[in-house]
Length: 175
Image: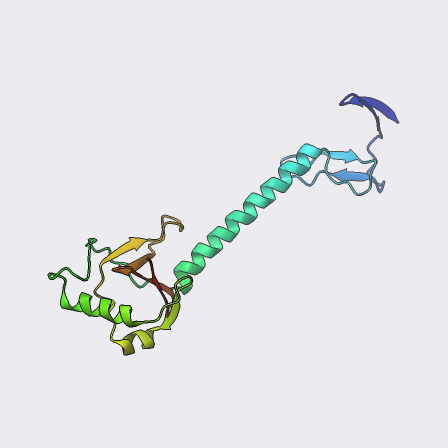
């Protein structure tokens, strides 16, 4: 057995013996170095390789989750408001607002929406209320999604309308 000084410590270096239960090949894909271990629970040739491989796997897992989330948003949740319309300001006291927009504002004002979390409505409930989603004050892009996705939300005065699923909407009143 050979002795070597590593990080100011004397370390015993055993000759490589592929038949030994202490023989390992570093699992880090960029290393793959064959080595002998003193501790049978250790697989990596160094702490640096172990940390680098762990961080690499963590990054890959995060990227996979983000791409899966983006795929699900595009695939399973059809976008409702993909046309970008010029933003207009609207206050209920403005007399020049279109009648349909004023009607939407009046309908939304009569709803009892949860102030903190908003309220869920189905498409049929929205249609039954007489809400016409073709008329709105403005449209804004979701800021926390990848730039290649076109996902927007509408606002009518202080009300925000988000499409969660093909038949489910979240209505929120911002104060």
